[in-house]
Amino acid sequence: MAKRSIGGIAGIWTEEHSVITAAAKTRESGFSKFDAITPYPVHGMEEACGIKRSWIPYVTFVAGLTGLLFGLWLTWWTSAVNWPINVGGKPMFSWPAFIPVIFELTVLFAALCSVAALFYVTKMPKMDPPVIDPDLTSHKFAIFVPQNDVGYDEVKIERLFKEWGAVEVKKVAEY
Amino acid sequence: MITRNKLVLGDKSLKDITDDICAPIEAYPSKGWLGLFTGALGLLIFYVIIMGTIISTGMGLLGVNHPNAWGTMIITFVFWIGIGHAGTLISAILFLFRQKWRTSVARTAEAMTVFAVMTAGLFPLLHTGRPWLDYWLFPYPNQRGPLWVNFRSPLLWDVFAVSTYATVSMVFWYVGLIPDFATIKDRAKNKLRRTIYGALSMGWRGTARNWSHYEMLYLLLAGLSTPLVLSVHTIVSFDFAVSSLPGWHTTIFPPYFVAGAIFSGFAMVVTLMTLVRIGVPEFKNYITIDHMEVMNKIIMATGLMVGYAYGSEFFIAWYSGNPYEKYVFFNSRAFGPYAWSYWTMISCNVLIPQLFWFKKFRRSIPVMFVVSIFVNIGMWFERFVITITSLHRDFLPANWGNYPWSFFDGAILVGSFGMFLTLFLLYLRFFPAISIAEVKPVLPVGRENSKGGH
Image 1: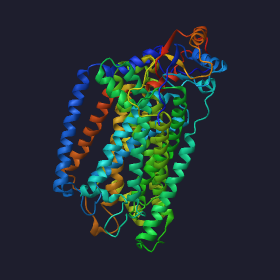
Image 2: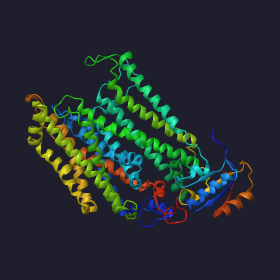
Image 3: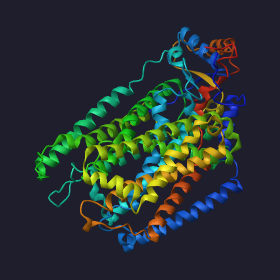
Image 4: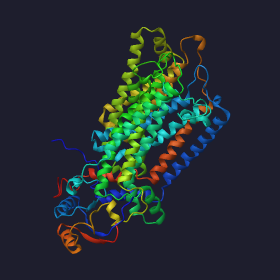
């Protein structure tokens, strides 16, 4: 279920290095629900925001394993159980010949489930999400602090953002 | 000290990059594009008519007959699927090797992969002769037993390999496009563009948490695509190598096919990139001569691998002492009725790329364009040589027969370019041809010369 969108305050920066510093300082000031919005993956931002390592690889592993077992089961069950056919006197369950199919199914399951995991965690697809500033997907960077964060105080945050080099501070009705 | 040449020229700011890459999408199409597109579309319509005729009349329109049961359809299938491999090599393998230069060519190379695989995929489907029954290729519960597909057949492995490859490369490409679609949506001046690209971007917002997952997914997909792309052409080569026909039954086929695929694919990337550079002059700052030179080096390296494989086949044919194997190589392939195709292949794939030993030629756009065209031709002939020269004379002379090349053989080969080029031109017009979000992090801006270096 998608989380209800929430208001808050956003600072906008034009330099990559100053937004990283600002994100680290926002975190040090005790905010925990804030997020940084950048046009491209900024190196060092995860550390600055205290973001944990993505859990998508676990999905990939489990999905890959599922694909592998499904491939193994499918080839075994169809060739040796459901309709066994003698092909050139080979064993019914001639598993080395099934490796290509099992491999492809492993990759297919792993890839598609990983993408599905990304869509789940980023709450996509979503039509027309609220936009703080259209330039945030081009050449500007933002830090957004939601209303429900600990110690939320618009005046204080605005002052801090300005101090840390924000070129603009915006009140956001919903994000 | 050896300094690296810049990956992006012209001291671009972040905004310049967005503007440059979005410009072809936001402007009215140029006359050149319209001209090319009209031509490509015409060729596509011709292709559709030819395919319709083949489907309604039958495979007999082609030269496919005993003993040459595989002809233009299979040759051209292998040709197109091979071309696709370079795109995945650039987008996945070079990503894993952290080759930053890949960023500006990866998007277009991946698009080439997707379109080449789409073009390729039609051929085996048509080659079945009754394409309306092609769903029989997949194992599904049915009322005929249920009768299942034969999982021991390389042709079935190919069904799985090509369909997985097509799916995963399309998904990989699309995931890469999502942040760029969001960029175009946010810049959009009119409502229609905003709606379309908004839908395509699926609500991407670019928060740090999202990017963290996104980058992880990109790495995972690159890691999955790498063994996948190698498996695909390996399995395509199994279609030949698992049979017992002299000329096909060799263990060298998987690496030989993979090297050939990358060779032909890079040639197609160079062909397309030289044209993209002409079509959108601003892209010369992103796809620089350095990029082209690196790709030409790869062409030469893989060309030498392919040349080594050609030589190795002859050595093994002699060393094995097998008279049938020797006959295929020393009589029918090099000096038989199809010797012209063999020597075309050798000239195009082994001799002509040797020009790239010279730095001057590696960095010359006209030279690399011509060489890449020759490699494309040579690699089509390689598949022709492998398929036809092995089939047309096998064990029994009573079985011999040449391939009666018909009008329809030529027409589907030429027509398939119409399909590929139409898709590619539409892509150039509607999709960001360089990854906006991937190019920005490789800029030196804000890192080396300004105070914020890290």
